[in-house]
Amino acid sequence: MTLVRFEPFRGLDSVLRRFDELFEDMVRSFPARFEIGSFAPRVDVVEDEHNVYIHAELPGVRKEDVKVSISEDRVLTIQGEKKQEQKEEGRNFLRMERFFGSFCRSFMLPENVKIDDVEAKFEDGVLTVTLPKTAPSKPKEVEVKVR
Image (tube, rainbow, N blue to C red; front, side, top):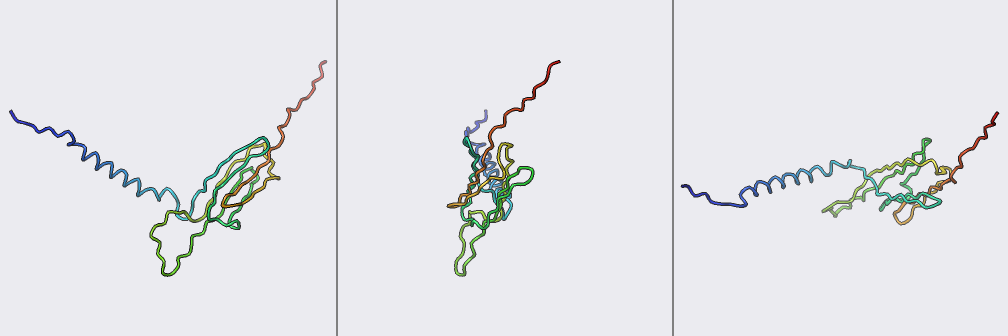
């Protein structure tokens, strides 16, 4: 009879090695999910009885570098550019985690928004777009004569 040595964690080493490979692949592919030179600012959309509000976080973006427009097909577009700091001589970046470049976010506006009265305000790195709502239209009633 041959004695077989019991090793409860025998296969665990290969499993851990596969997990390491998997996570390395994920980390390597992460920057590919974002185009170099672009980013998407985070946005909150809220409403109350009278308005719809869009709040876009744009830290480090100058007001002059932001454009808000509404197309004929009722699409609100926020676009602009966050410029990268200039490298100064004698200073080296050791780590860069912030995103720089152009951005563009678009939102389909509901039918009950008055597109002619839209306002935008940029303060403390937050763009607030106020979209006033129209009063709900009453259903049109047509009287039909009975003969």
